[in-house]
Length: 604
Image (cartoon, rainbow, N blue to C red; front, top):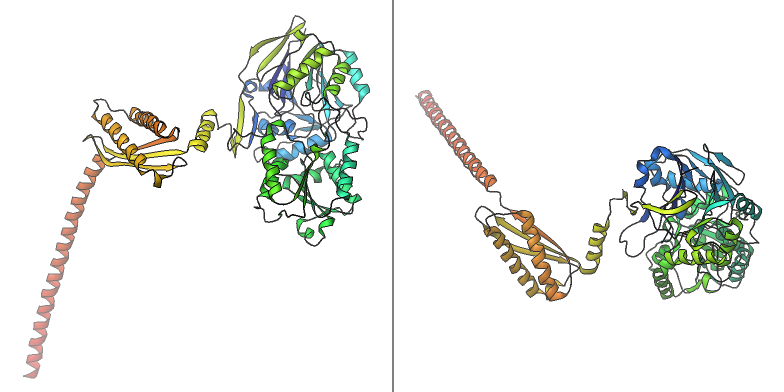
């Protein structure tokens, strides 16, 4: 009997950052390796990736990373993972191409080349575990689900999926293959829950294409279209609609250009001949002939739209004749940013249109699709993944409705370990799995304390106190000087500043007077007393930085001796110089006398 463990490292009780480890005997299979874009409370953080510390002591057991598709929530953390684990990476043609692009852009792992292209016909044997794949429908071509065939039954991970009967080649789900996997016996199913709250029918991609064409036809002036760069099906629809309405497409965003070029090279995106123009060429065309396709950093368009709406970009500015068409559906976590972006766009005077106001476009399964997948697979155990807790919980309810017992459904948290023993899964140990935050080139060097300080700085500002002491004489040499940023307006709060300086002076003097002097205690005492004082007067808690400097008496004494010696040397030099000048003077006088005597003799 095989020992099986399933551990979510991300993707549960949160949006994105999908990563799941399935441990079968002495092999560990990593399913997806994604990132999450930070929300408002993660100040200054670029992206968030899973914490895989647990795997570092088990690196020799990792069989490989198996990717379902090429979106950032599935492949975004791969470059960072490969810094720690040089293991094979498996995925479809399109997925591997985008994974290579992500790895190439990271200097530390850009030479990694153990990539392996698989498809729905691929089977890989790992000494008792056979890995195979099945095609699913999503917004990017060549999306695959993953099957781990064990002696106890199949462990299936769907990845992102939905059902669309009009899906074209490269996007179509193989329903017969789903039925085959289910008939083999599915021990555990990990299934996409992102659309579990969607009770309606998702709009078919065919209908979305027709909708875009219709809107482009009846829109006058320039159209600025915002889309996720890796949403290949949407980009194809935009290009087709542009060609049908005699418009040219200019690309705005480095990520977008790289992804489109990659998709075109692989034949996954059909680019109408002559459809693309540069941003410089746009100025030579009539506005009614132009579509500008916009994405932002890492392919996300919302931030890019905010930058454009603020007028800070020299290449592209909105005017009242433009139509801004947002064709992406952001997550609920970005609702505040979406509303802020809407407001900024309206302020530019441009016409603004969001696709989700008219349609229900989604790359994820709705409730009906999720239950259909459950009926295809007939799993013995079910683990909803990819979604916030409310979505996982709703998906669990949907599973109960199709006959899966409640005690066979696990709504997991990050770090939960599902262990299979004696013919059943149970929730056993829990490992510590936190978030690893990426800030610039720093990986994991930003923790909760730093984030807390950043939050306090953003809310209440900083308060810096500088004082100079003579510890030997137990007195304050220079009265405390106070600098404040983001706390209060200093010019109108002189009294508060003076009282704060007096308080600090008293606290410092009290510590100097104590028999046992301790620097740490002094600084902490200043913080505590000043914090209470400032809160009593302002109801705010700024970050307080006490800077206490000490006069170095020994250095001063040494310098005094040095100065005396230097002065003595200088006197000695001056004396010698005077003596030399005196002797030279006497010499000149003798010479002049001798010369005068000689002249006198000549005259005689």
